Length: 295
Image 1 (cartoon, rainbow, N blue to C red):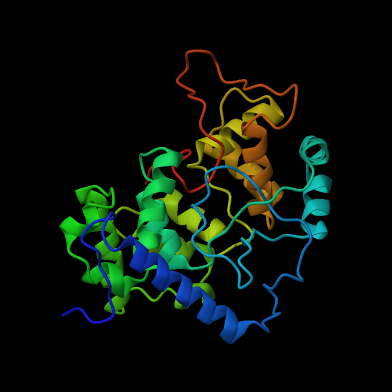
Image 2 (cartoon, helix red, strand yellow):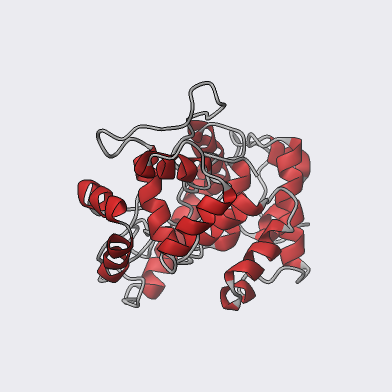
């Protein structure tokens, strides 16, 4: 007997019950916390970020609205002062909005789901999971048999990654709440130590779940493409990338958001200066949903 961990045998079974349970949970949360107006409530606005390929949104705020990566005019002013070409791009693009998933475990599972599959496929698999489980928690996933998780559209390897992460959280080997107090390099080390989570995925989680302000991933091919397009580079070496990372710090995450937009063609007249035939495959612009890397 698993107790509270509900695990449907297949997506097609018990779907109505799962949806009913999920709706009841949501109503309960809204009734219990309807007066919430804290820092993440609907009153806080300003500039936020958009790009493609973040984790499929796994959590909405208490009024059912999606949460977005938050930054302010000070970050924009800093970046514009540091890089004239980026300043022109920011003015051309305007404010951008980028969805985030504050629940770090759900975001982690979401990233694993999206590895090496299309965005459409990821959305489908993620919806099956959330329809069935409601809240994607370590306890629920650890208790579900492997073969039943595979019926949601997960590969055998991904099931192993997801259950391994869930079991580490439940065993206390990975304290997700404690990560909030650690510096970026330590957070990246802890997350990338998980099977199936490489440095790039860890950096995307730090950006699109933890909302760390100074993440700029060398492993993201779309960010490299954005830099080539913006500054007319044929190739982005580690040394050159480090120069731009220093230039944009402490607002590397916001710079990344705009570089993803640039890589996706948001600024007319910019092109990729990579040598033709040099293996510079055009990536989907940025983020943890499999756009530029799969680890």
